[in-house]
Image (tube, rainbow, N blue to C red):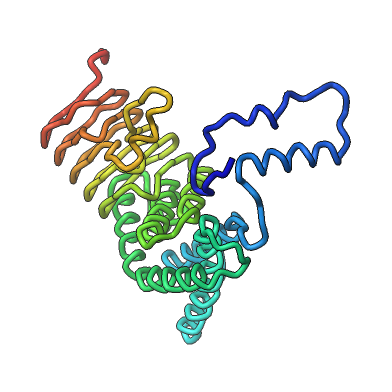
Length: 312
């Protein structure tokens, strides 16, 4: 059976992946079974088709965060006279590091068998160049998120505390980086980035979601924002909020891949803890307030209020 590298495996491999036996198998026998499984599913790890490195992608993220929020990595700052040359060196290192990882992500799905694919290399070089051109604007967006968090949380003592300590700011910063790369055509690397932020913060934002300016996630643990979610400006949400899709029967989910499956949240909406908002046709109108522990599958008019009917 041949399988495209980018397609999910749906067919049974029971003929190869047999139940473990009590009698120990030799290394040779185990290797034969695994090799047969790889051949059957079409997943062959060949030279030149290496996946992006999690370690390298993490390093690229730290470099980007340091460019946007200097000092966030705990590195000593350069002397004022060395600032420009320090930034130039960091950008140069980042360009090389990120280009290699983006190239790997592109080449995983490339039909060309050679380890060094000029087409993927050239595409990655152009893609990363376009991305780096957007970094100054991304920094401005991140600073707006930091300001929104500071203004939205009376416990915050300073902008520095918010920028360095708040998990919501970290997750949204990574999202903005990953979203930009995804829109430029990067594959795998954007999802690796947001999943790293998910692991670190407990906040799961798909890089395909559209999020406006001055976005604040307070506390953050358990927040889920699905791929086709659309969020306006100055939106604030709390821990445990889900912007999700309606569940479908097994075998039907792939049919929804290119459809709007997640809700639209308009400007100035406030969503309290553990609210669940589902469905691609669900629109939460501007200035609406969604109470905690609510389940919303119908649209809410601008300025509307939704509260938990079980609340005493």
